Image (cartoon, rainbow, N blue to C red):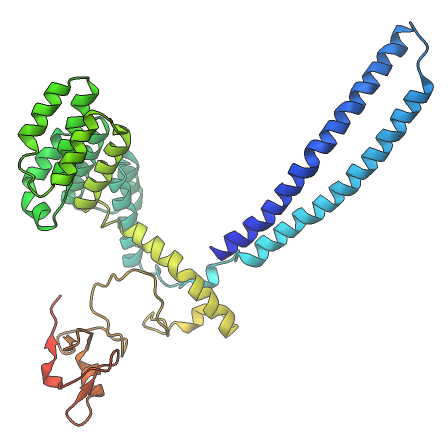
Length: 366
């Protein structure tokens, strides 16, 4: 972000110069052109003898103006060149040194990546592209995954076509799950139907619909009052429909399993730190990975996706013989780390000053 702001500031300086000098030179050129065209017509018409002094004066002034414009253009060219240098300075062109070239070396890893790409295409409703990709990549995706994405995307398309019926059916089928997470989806769907009726100009029917369907949402009195106020001040229904679609995508977890999106975001978040490592070590970043493909430092990417628990102290994976242990203070480390940190029958948490007995730690099951 800092790099973008730096380059943007240089571009703004150039634009400010152009706005200052551009109209000025354009005005002068138009004035000279008009004068020359007038003198040309006078010469061609031969109705009167042209004013030689005026012609010479105009040509001289034009030569001086063109010289000034040429000098100014040369300075502009220098400033534009500096923008290119600023881009080269603030942005890294080659990112290959900050990547692990062995990440997708085996057939299994390539197949896994292809499946992730295919699922992303299914999520994005690009069915024909996904099927062609499956055929050319020679992989198979579970039929149940296809059906799930097909059904959820069908509901999204129905909402965009202003048909909430499939969404209501899905809400009833998943009501327990939605109630557990205190979702507003069902109320928002009724709100959209209410506004659709209102847009048709039938206020009486809209009020009847509100009385019938809003009465069960006893915990949403303020929202109901706000909705009824829409009778006098109708909102932008297109924007509200978009919000309902986004809420459905969120509550249906349609946006939670996009592994391709997660991978790209994690990579982009980690890239600046990896490039800093490269500069600090003054050598190929690929050399800092060991045979287990682990980084020697922790990089905070804002994501915490792990198929297994990784001990933050020993940097090792948990297992049956080395399970994750939750301390009294709530921090979690591996059993091996707990044994190494034990001193004279006492244990001090490596993250906070809380002291406790090793026996007070509890095995954590994910």
